[in-house]
Image 1 (spheres, rainbow, N blue to C red):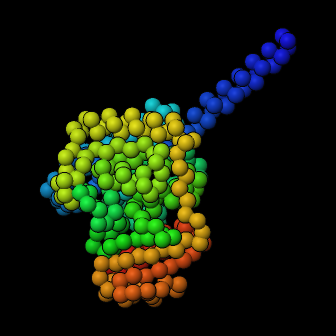
Image 2 (image 1 turned 45 degrees about the vertical axis):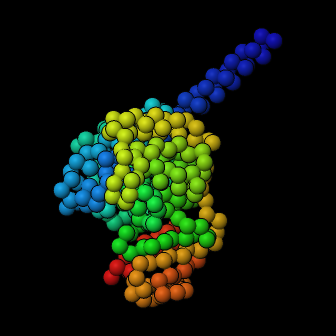
Image 3 (image 1 turned 60 degrees about the vertical axis):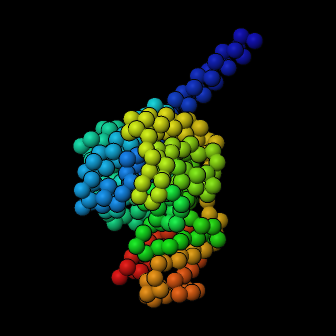
Length: 297
Ligand SMILES: [Zn+2]
């Protein structure tokens, strides 16, 4: 009996060490957009030439910091923040928490998900927004407000969160927390999974008006939600699109699709709509980004 007890103690010690070790290696990826940040309600906040842009950059940086603190509370050992809005140079590095690395600038092949790979344990979205055409959703759009009307993948209507969640899922990683307006948090539960922790930091009153919680409360909600999300990551959905993946893109105007059939494999199915199918989702995602660029040329 005694020998069994000693053996059990040794096994438990090893197991404990293992858990501690896993915690030490915990890697968290944070993608930070801007339209869904608390206080942001107008294009003036999110455009680099807007008069309120400087203030909105500070709010964005502080929400990123709240997510970093939540990740640290959950035991994260490595945190990477990817600036994911517009030219992707919004976050003020001088004010960012020193424990996180920052991916800044553009273009980046994986855009809002640049830097992700299979070594991460959890993905966080901050400042996200609803898809184009959502009611009472602050600055709603899908990838490009000047070019895209709708994006479908395997017949499902997508928003930026679900497209980016599918990139995380491609590498086997769950999205555990999303912050933004109420509309995007509802879409995340509907499109990606019901278990995901969310924080609705504002509720759209229209496309360019919202009822915001205080900045302080928003950051508290984010810090606590991120911690809970990471701690419960084993119960969070790993969102995957079954191959082959069929992309359907509906552009705003028919002249935007005129040039898209120059790319092999792209079919124009109506005046404003093109389709493309491939087994590899990352290939589909990159192709989609090429189509958006070409549509604007
Ligand atoms: Zn954005």
